[in-house]
Length: 400
Image 1 (tube, rainbow, N blue to C red):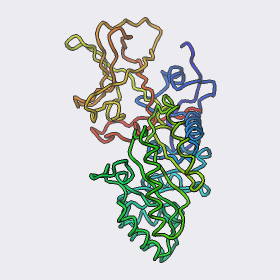
Image 2 (image 1 turned 180 degrees about the horizontal axis):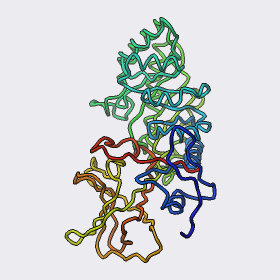
Image 3 (image 1 turned 30 degrees about the vertical axis):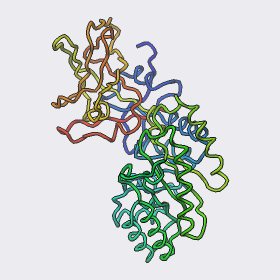
Image 4 (image 1 turned 120 degrees about the horizontal axis):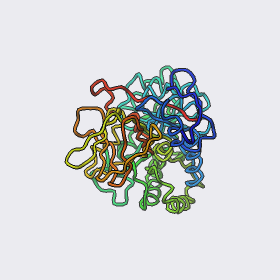
């Protein structure tokens, strides 16, 4: 097949992941070159793209940058990238903590509102920085001081108290209001637990014109907390909410970064990102198993769908804007052009298992072809109803 690359294409295991030559310039080239050897459905992740995007975002926003591991907690991928994550990673589960716990020099942040005593013990033992979401967290931390002294913590503030109007209801259910935050300050201080800083996050895709205003308001709230503490905090985590395509509005990020200059003199500023780093570093591939026509529309049935990539089905969106896959032919035979739209569906019995759409005039797939979906590196592999019908999980390949 033209443009093919000879690789050792095996799914990742607990051993070393497969190596794909550096000559491959994109994930599409990798899948196109190895179409007959990949076991589908599958994900292909590229650590070089992860590192490139991490460095690009970090240099553009001009602050420290924490990686949200929950966006892509693939251990084999992390083992290729962790050295580049110089400002640390944020984890939200014990499973994620186990991936990073062996990296003794890496700064670790643990952020989960429902953290129980066992998880708290693991976090403290790993010398992780706990993001305190509520007063129960405070008591769990105090209980740990019998054996270990926790690393100075970070207080999570509800985004509602840093929004411009600062009026109820809160923007989400995360973090504390100012009253609880001040109570936490006193309780932690009495237990001899230090506070390193404050954190607030307005939510996914929240980066925009209000971000600079939120940063200013955050600094004002931090000053109130410092007044109760009696000492100055060292860090502020401003969250992020960067979209997977944040660089398409790079000028907006640059302008925002400049607005943070007054805060740099006093605090070490952090942002965090998952989608903005991982999304474009991964792709999803599924193989066509059958085709048919219903009411004039082409239906392409694939061996993978919402059971392996729930986000592609967009069932949570009021208006579904389905992705259009790149088609990778399984042979050199000529393909026809569709005279009507094409709907790509998955392998389950759920009517919402529709993962893609191509307009009339697109190449008409045939069984054996691969549907290649880009920008599937963040959450797609994990935010999925994997146990539905006992469906076969997607394999994972690492490029490079």
